[in-house]
Structure formats: C-alpha cells, structure tokens
Amino acid sequence: MADRLVLLGTKGGPAIRPGGPSPTSSLLDIAGRRVVIDCGLGVTRALVNADMSLKDLDMILITHLHSDHVLEFGPLLHTAWTSGLARKITVYGPAGIEEYWSGFLQSMRYDIDLRIDDEGRPDLRDLVDLKVYADGLVHQDGNLTITALRVDHPPVVDCFAFKIEAAGKSIVFSADTTYFPPLADFARGSDILVHEAMLPEGVDRLVVRTGNGARLKEHLLASHTLVEDAARIATSAEVKHLVLHHLIPADDPQFGEADWIKALDGKWDGRLSIGRDGLVIPL
Image (cartoon, rainbow, N blue to C red; front, side, top):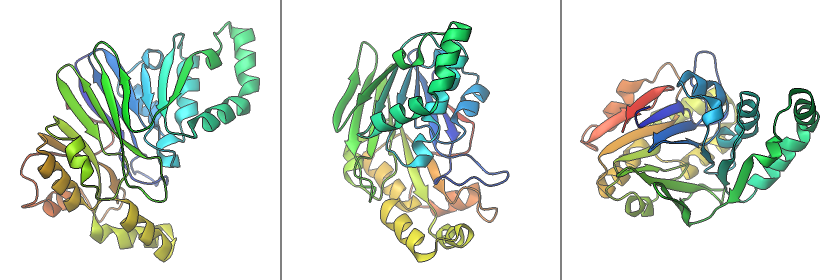
C-alpha cells in the first residue's frame, strides 16, 4: 500500500453525538510500517474502514492519557488479537500507560484465558511490548525514527508531540497543547504538521451543549490551540502542509470547513487540510 496519513477520528474531546465524528486517532502508513497515533473511541472500526488488516498492526503511539486518546487502546489490541494477530506489537505510552494496560488485561482475563485454551491463540499478554517514553528519542531502527517533545496541556503533565521520520519524510503530530512556540522548532521544515485547532466562536456553543459551564471553557482556552495560533506555529516552522486535527468544535452543524478556512485567511498560505474522519493524505 502507498505511503499515506489517514485521519481516523478528528474531534476534540470524548463525547460523541449523532452523525458526528469520532475522537482522536490517526494511522501513518510509511516505509512498510503501520503506526497508529492515539486510540480514541472508534479507532478499531476506523482502521478496518481504512482497509488495514488489524493483524498487520505494527506500532502504537499514545500522546497522553486523556480518554479521547486512549479509551480504545486495550480494545484495539484485543480485537487485533481475535483477528489473527500473532506477532509482537510495540507500544509507546507516557507514564501511567502500564496501569491502563494491566487493568485492561485484568478486566478481560476470563475471555483471554478462555480463548487461549478454547481457540488455540497465543497469549495476548506476550504480544505487547509496552515501553514508557519521555522527551527525546523514542524509537529508531533501520528506516524509522520517532522523537517526542513535551508540550503544554494543563493539567496533564505527560503530553507529547511526535515527530516521525521515514522514507525521506517528516510528519509531526502536535498532540493536545496550548499555543507552544517550541513546537515550531521541533517541526522545522517538516512535510506535514498535524496540529490541533479550536475555533474561538465555537467554544461558547460547545460549552452550552456540553453543560459544564465556565469551568470547561477555562480548560479549553488554557489547554488548546486557537486555529490562528496553529497557523503561527506552521508558518514559523516553515512546514509544507498544515493538517488541522482534534477539531473543537467538530460536530456543531453551525460550523463547517468554510469556517476553518475563513479563520486562516491571511494567516496561512501553504497547503491546508481540514480534518475529517477517514481523510486520506498521500505522502
């Protein structure tokens, strides 16, 4: 399969609404590797819809432990296992990912043990090579280099952007972050910057729909990036292609692609993609 970036789920936050997009996850097919970045609700079905065989899953990267990025991590691995996965998968997660994985395995122990005995499957617990990462070099092998940068996403401390380099390409994922100028240096000259984005005029409507009032608005403004600030990072970094992801709001019928484009008028003049579930971007 040709190298590609697939946006599997593109909304910010854990809630899902009728007809709306799913929380955050992405697939990077590059240099023969299949790397999943974040595992929000819906990632498993989205991978199947993207024509990826789950038993071919190669690597998972988790940016941080907010539920809209990790909720379906365990179910994805379990479903890949029941779909024929029989080789090691490398998983990189921040501190705390071990507790999530051990808790998931405990919750599914009856089913896992039963399927090993009744269906002759390998032990799922032996197929996951779980590694905790921090700032700096995360992974390097013959054709793939992954680097992490701690970003600013209060109150979460361990939240990291990723730079993935392979096949002469460089793709950067911002993760969840407020406007964070060091990210521009991290992403310098990259082919693609996948950056979270928030429409300021959509925040008040989102708060009303969700019902958490002023406290939610305070979190959004302190922890996420306005769309024009995402453009500032992309411009400063001189990236070739800006991809808006983890959209806030993403499922409000009053806001669509035209609003995102309008918000960037005069602020970004490079190649632009507005995230939507299932969007395929050839590399």
